[in-house]
Every structure is written in structure tokens, then in C-alpha cells.
Image 1 (cartoon, chains in turn brown, red):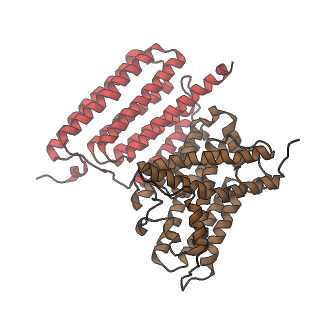
Image 2 (cartoon, rainbow over the protein chains, first blue to last red):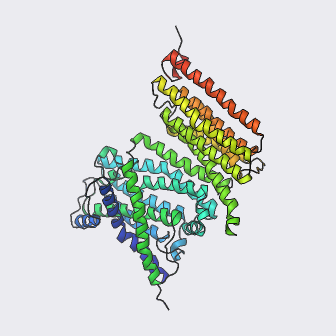
Image 3 (cartoon, rainbow over the protein chains, first blue to last red):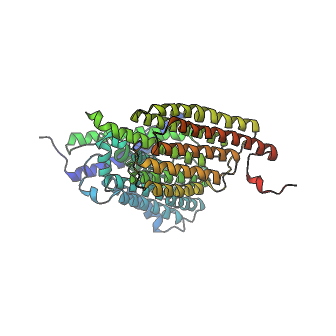
Length: 320
Length: 224
């Protein structure tokens, strides 16, 4: 009789995987990106060292800032801890709390996290941080319709919008995964991830020019442990979005089918491998396109919305 | 056994994907700012239409359709783009961004128009034997978007490319409703396109000679 995890333990393991390995994936992407540009680049583990360094520093709070400035990053971190409970990170069957929220629920929690970071940035009275938070909210609102319509497509295809069911539908047959509606939904979601993880063509992740910043601009005033929490949270957000892209839409294979300790533990390296493969794709995109001008980003959003909308139309008219 | 079961759905999905690709290319043409890339997109779209015709021909064993696909390939993928690109080269001026409205606004308007086409035509109780159900709605949406290109772009090359791609949409529609049409009728349609190319070629040259630009924005100015 194989030793099994209790459901709660596997669920905790899902959260732990995201928390512990998100910096690894971020570091790996930064490393690959540097390599593609012919630089040696930071070590793969550099993000961990950065976090350790930041945690040992003191926190400086701007004069006018109140408790929101401190609470915002921590609240966002807590939100990102919550989302892995709802999505298939390691197991292909829903864990006890997996029914707590659907894709919309996960999206709301992610949105809440972004909102709390923006609120913390707006609290500072610093122009660049406020610019960043205002932009992040604006573009967040513009990309939202695409997310909604991707969810609608999922709902039409599977009859529910629980991520586990979409994953099961993608896994059930390759032919179903190659349906036009599904492909369009995947493409639209890919563009959404590109936007939400602050990647080119929307934002260049390693940029230091404040005027081009969107998501990065929000964190300019934070320092020390609070900044570490923000950086950690943003790498967790990236990995969470990769989970949805990989384990729900494109490649939900290699997940544990039972709660046997061996298969659940084996799912961790498989998943991180897949996340790194996706990260390489993002790094290649980063290196092959240029950043859009700020006022052209709406064109990118319009393209994402167009594709998501067509996905819904095609699935309504029987192409799903 | 498995192949026999999956074959029809594979055909359906392939046909759906190709029809959808035609529509997506149309949107890409609406967005693209360079006339040259627009013409290249038109060539690509024609290639997709050719593939679709060949797919339908292979599925239903229609020999005539292979001839049409071949003619489409020669005419729309090679000849027409080559002629427009030559006119562009001769004109020597390249227009960038002749959009009448912002790109995002144009895409949203075209999307609304295509949804209209999608639902009005797509919900008709019409059953095609040659292509799956969404194809008709998609092709009509494509025609309407092509129409929007002609309306929303203010240069002669885009308008010509929009008109030719509108003809592509009509080709897809004719594949849906009448893929068994006699060869003579189908070829007559293609020769219509040749006439249009000649007319548009002359129009572009005359317009360029008179106004020294490819933009239609100057046409409302008083002469004298």
C-alpha cells in the first residue's frame, strides 16, 4: 500500500510549490534572456539572493504614507497564496478547496492583489509610483474584457468555468485541444499573460526608465522587506499565470492522478520543467519584438479582445 | 476504425480553422499600416482560400474545384499581389498609416460589424453539404470587414486590397453555398477579378499622376 498524502497536504504542497519555486522560474527566465542577448546574465538563483538581501535591510516609509503602504504588499502576497488552492498545480483532480472559486474567482483575487499594490503605491504621493499605479489600473481594466471572453469560451466548451474541468477537457483528446475555439482562447490568454506579467510588447521587464513603466513603476517607493515581498509576489503571480496557461489550457499532462506521495512529488519537477519551457518562449518573444509605445498598447488590447471574442463566436456557432 | 471516426471532425476542424484564418487575416489587413504588408497579407489570405478550396475538393472528390484552386493560386497569390506591388514601386511613395480612426477603434467597429454578419447570416437555417456550419457566418463576416477596410482606410492601395480581399470572402461564401458550380461559371467569377485588377491598376496610376500621392484624403479639395 503506497503512502498517500492527505488532500489538505497536497493542497498545501501546491501553495508551497508556487511560493518556493516562483523565484527560481523568474531567475531562469532572466538568465535565458541574458543568454539570448549574448550576455552571461545573472545566476539562476539570483532572485533568491536578492530576496535574502532585501529582507535583511531596513524598511523606509515615505513621510505621508499610512498603514496602506505597509499592508498593500502583504495583502497582495496573501492573495497570491490563495490562488494556487483553486487551480491544478500538481494534481489533475480537484482538491477539497478547489471548488471554492472558478476561473473568475481566481481572476478576482488576482485583480484584488493588483489593486492593493496600486493602492499602496498611490499612498506614497510620489509621482512615478502613482503614475505606475494609475497606468496599471487603466490597462488592467482594458485587458479585463479579454479575460472575461476567454472565460466565456471555457464556459461554453465545458459547461462550467472551473479550471479543473477545462484541464480535463484539454487532456481528454488532442483533437478537442486543436479545435479553433480552443486555439483562439489559448492565443488570447497568451496575450493576456504577456500583458499581466509585464512582458514586451507591453512593458520591458528589465527597464529602468520610469516613463515607460507600468507594473514596475508601482514598486519604486518600497524598500527592504516590503520590496522583497512585492518582488516575490510578482514572481508568484507570473508562475500562477503560467500554471493556468500550461495546466489548464495547453499541456495539462504530467499532473499527479492520485495522492500517492511519489506521483505528487514527481509532478513538481515536471511542472517546473514545463513552466521553464514556457518561460523560454516568453524570453524569445522579449528578444524578438520591440516595446510598444504607451498609446499603442490599446491596439494590443484590441487584438487580444478580438481573438477572445472570435473564440466565443466560433464556439457559439458550433465550431467549439 | 479510429481514423474513420475522427476523419469527419478533423475535416470540420481544419475547415473551421482555415475559414477563421481568412477572417483573422482580414483583421490583420485592417490593422497593418504599410500598404506593402497589406498586399502580402492579401497574398497569404488567398493562399488560405486556395487551401480551403483544395480541402473541399479533396473531401468531396470535386475535380473542377482543383482547377479553381489552381487558378486561384496563380491569379490571387502570385499575379494580383505582384501587379499591386509593381504599381506601388512605380509610384515610389509609401503611405504609412492611412487609418481614418485609431487602430483600436477600427478593430472594435469591424468586430461589431462582423458580429452582425456572423449572427444574421450564421443563424439562417441553411445547411451546406460542403463546409461546416460556421463557415457561412465567418465568410460573410469577412466580407463585411473587407468592406470596412474600404471605408476606413484613406488610400487607394488599401482600398484596392480591401476590394480584392472582399472577393476572397465571396469565394469562400461560394465554396459554402455552391461548391458544385460548373467550372465555366467559377472561372467567369475569377475573370471578374482580373477586370477589377485592371480597373484598379489604372485608377491607382491615374490618381497618383494627378495628385502625386496615393492618399484619397486630397480628393475633396477644390481644384483651380
